[in-house]
Image (cartoon, rainbow, N blue to C red; front, top):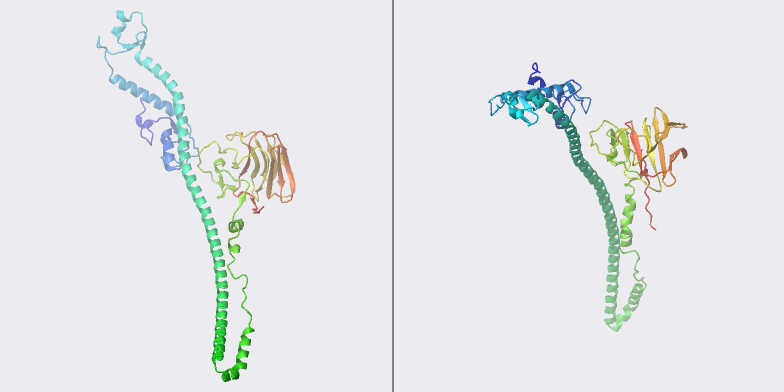
Length: 464
């Protein structure tokens, strides 16, 4: 190590001697911890020196550089210890040997004294080097354990950040949904209040017109009564002269029809208030959708993009997501949020013109990390061919007369059947028969940017 300087073994980030050095694709080396911290702060996997983007998220260890650094640090410690080497208190000589029997350093004079007769000795430098190597070996498992804990902590930090992002996005979506519902209810309220006021205005106007007509009749009758009473108070000659005209006037008024009460004059409260909540709810179904399967974002492959309502998925650029146990990495899929352990269930997947996809079911107990060998039943489309596979069996190619636009998955858990239909042509595609003992989840995956969708179901509201 004499021809090596400390500068040659210095990390460009922390400016200290390399610890657990790793090498990135551009051939620059860094302490593993320094590189991880750098990438965590910069949010991009680029070289801190040349800024070239690294092709690997876990750069390999630079084993040769690691060994050089360990030797350099060991020699530096030895030189430092030699510079401050203690002297034997009995003979004022440098300690050169280590007595294995007394487990203490001794000088050359001590070795030949009676105190250490027939004792075993080792050169201090040689013994220290052996013990340091043993210590280094025993330290290796702890270092490996530390890496495991650091990786777990890094994932926890990422999980904590992702939880905040999820909470904010979910809150935003909830507010958007309620905003639409509030708008609908507000508009519906305005329409119903407007209808009530229109009825009030119409019926008030008709009642006003009727009151005015009655007032005119009352005034005319009052005039007739006063005129007749005046005739009755006149002298006999005047009375007799005007008698005939007075009788005609009275008779004309008595022939008038009496005022009649007309039905429907009052506000129709029953029409406005009767089943009000139900009627609004029934009308609301036009803006409300229902999906029999809701996709779980926590199971989605990092390359998947889910829709806002969690009912469709498309393939996109890989996202940086927490490595939680539910997430499917190798098996590019996303699962439904609800699993089934009994009964019959069915749902439709709209595959459209997507060029690469699969749909089906997956068992809860399957290994989601690494290559899957059992626990799923699916139909897939790839390379222009349709095929089915299950439990790691060989893929079976299907003969399909026309391009499928929609796949219906029917699960009969109790009878152990998974059936695939073409709902457009109402034809059977394939049937799997298997005794189920596990919870089964809807499962879907794609390699295409075109989305795969879960068909929305019609909503009907009835009263019993």
